Length: 81
Image (cartoon, rainbow, N blue to C red):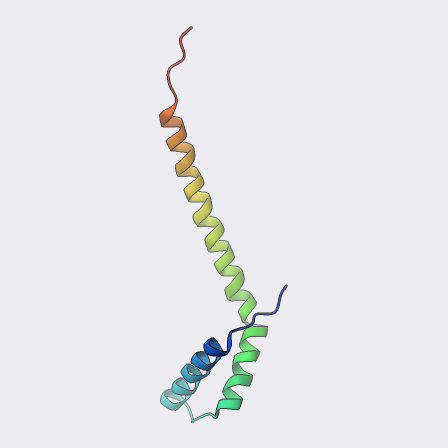
């Protein structure tokens, strides 16, 4: 699987959120430890969230395909013998 990577802007935003969480809920954390934590979660936990997203997308697509199948059935015309 391809490594989960974030743009510079995304990483800065996520690190900011991690630091804010630590400030509120735990002990303050520096930018570098927050980046290490982000990298850890991206590598170790990220695939679980990614795979869940894929499964959710797959289920949504299957529902849409069922709807399309029903729509096609409604378009069918009676065949004369």
